Image (tube, rainbow, N blue to C red):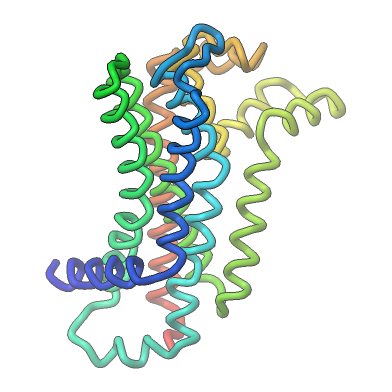
Length: 275
């Protein structure tokens, strides 16, 4: 346990010194500042205004840019250390491979999740001071969604990093994975269904296997209980899960995918040729 904590602390310290972390924090903090400055809280769309409107926009922005940020910065973890010859030095230290690997994941998760959480928490605090009604339930659930999405793509990134033999290959693979998941969102799936006359259940099943789509739909379900924006596909989802069941699925499924990928990456890392 001590080795895991030490490995996590070292990874956090390394992340704080890295240039990518500064850019990462500025992007998500800047997005919220920009939304506040442009008066988004004063606008009304489909009955949503104030901080609820802010949360809806922010969560959609996170869905688009958070996964690719996490993937690109994470896939260099194992592959980069392998190329830099860190493993030879690691084998001489009294730190187990499991403690190093899971400590690295823990430290990287703290580094990628805290800025996203801090940005939205500060926005809610500002809203409360400014006199806006704070949607605490929506805020809490969105934090859970961001937690699950961050862990999901962190696990995917560590799996890719364990598979790839060089940082360049790892980054290229990460971009392809992100682009593939991004393409299999609603518009592409609807196009496939119309062109190929695929059964709606099959198309919805593919969508429910995509963690980005699950995240997006769950965030919609919080503010739109009937999922009106999704059209006929909403009936399949609500009949299968119900609104409460789907909200739970939207949090647990990405965590499951991330944990499975992280565990798979660890098995490959442990059995592979470290040097």
